[in-house]
Amino acid sequence: MPISPDDIRIHTRPTVRTARYAVLGTGPAEAQRVWFVLHGYGQIVPRFLRHFEGVVPEDCCIVAPEGLSRFYIDMPRSDGAHLQRVGAGWMTREAREDDIHDTMRWLDELYADIMQQSPHAAVGVLAFSQGVATATRWIAQGRVRPRAFVAWAGGVAHDVDAQAMTTALQDTDVTLVSGDQDQFVSDDTRAAMLSSLQAWQPAATSVVFAGAHHLERTVLGPLLARLSGPESAARDR
Image (cartoon, rainbow, N blue to C red; front, side):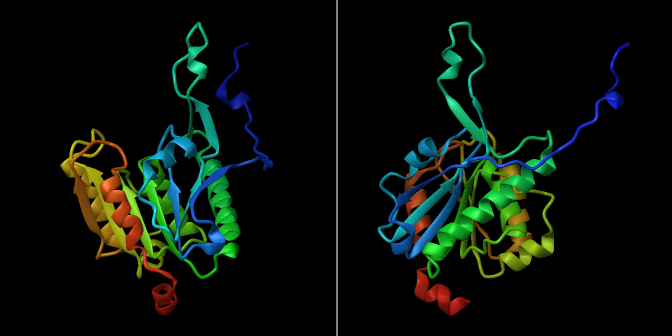
């Protein structure tokens, strides 16, 4: 007798697993600025942080959490060559809510650990591509309240609470960044992304650079440096 979908009963159970993150720049205890940076689809943090080479301010700590789902990027090949390149992602449509919950918990735990070492630092969130949706969920649902938020070439999550985002971003410098040759961001898409951000923070601005779907150092460096230091951050609290 064939098995019908009703015959298969799916259960879930929380488990413990090891997540990883990378730190670049000064250590959290000495940092005046802490940027949490979320990678895009199919990236892992060592490769993602190569784009930050030479543009991190001296008083800045870059913290890059890695998505909990790692996988081989290339299609299977008989010689096993597809086992060379590994990527990571934040979630898929399968067991979506569980992935979101696990990711929010992971980001909040990391945030608490880092900020315990650097309680007076100004905090920024920068997210690239698929990481933008995860970042907006984190800002809406999690513990982070950034002084600056950079959404780089990615769409915001459409399932976040609008009022929660408006409250979280009311004092935040919000910037949308994308390349003029980005294959995933047309002019219409860029306008829609900016409109979504401005619905939460009316002062959100857009930066368009000459390039494709990547982090551009000439834009990235000034954005990292624009995050206010601890004195002004404390004044604004």
